[in-house]
Length: 440
Ligand SMILES: [Mg+2]
Image 1 (cartoon, rainbow, N blue to C red):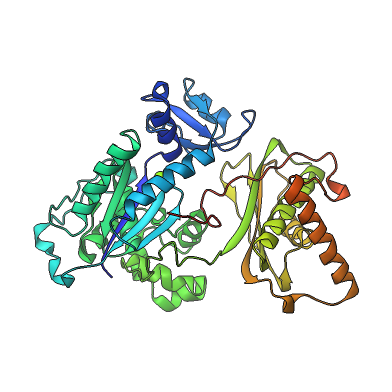
Image 2 (cartoon, helix red, strand yellow):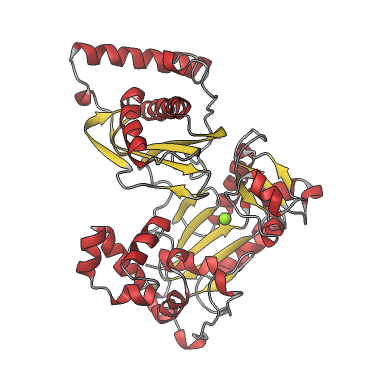
């Protein structure tokens, strides 16, 4: 593997807005997740807002309480996508190995021209102190001669010149994706951090907290804590078999992570045709514990998911459901949050029946703020998957009719009777681009 660059735009949606509108520059702004100002969460806070304590994912109400001067801007996904296309066009001048990780994040692999001999670890200070977002600014490694640093500097200069000085990025450079992403997270905004070798990577990992690394979310972190594993030093002491007993195949990933090892390749956008899951989530107009309105919203989301599966000619086997409660603030994932069917499905009603069961299993009766559903384990919808049972044939005709009408006249023009008078649920562009094709 050559050198890996991880490029992450800083406060992306907010900085695009600030670049577009001079009156927003230098001010705390928050970009909302939807088109309704009434009730939603922040999808991005500007650098100024973050400094004042505003965080991504906060509800508007919380954000306004933390920062009364916060300027709220409605998100404009088409605008962000067009800027994303522009920076992808810049990146692809440097390498064909460009992986689009999300709307504001990419991995670039620069093939090593002269092989591993270009690495000169002794040129770099390897003592890293005060590393990680929780411990103040890290002391940075900024070697001039490390492969990729030149490219990173050129990219930064071109972003400034071609997109505007208000859109900045943090770049992490290392020998694999995991460590490059970690390096990029060490300095925000406008950072450039190199972790040249495994020795340095281990030092950085030792100072980091478990969820600073991509791949350890709150749920895995909690499970590791329960096992008495509080940091990467602890994790490194656990035998691989032990981790695999608790986390199945992901145990191996965790074992490697603790050692700064990651074999996942950079997958260029033109090779990444596989969609791993199709999902939708929705923030309710008002927090509620009324099962009827939760049920209606969930059914609508399932219909949207199913419609998208059908439009991509896919069927899925595993159904996931989750929610965010108003009390806990965070996303709640209960045990048993997924169910696997014995057959493939792209029928909204069927997906709903399973996700409603999951929801009932994980819900503890508290007020709900947001609810989401996704289908994974996807396969192409081939005629062989179709059943010839009369009721199945009838169902397929109904689904085809639904799609024809709704694709022409808008979502939910034709809908199930139970959905009458239910809350409006709109389709939103997926921020992770998982099903967007890029022509760059
Ligand atoms: Mg970002």
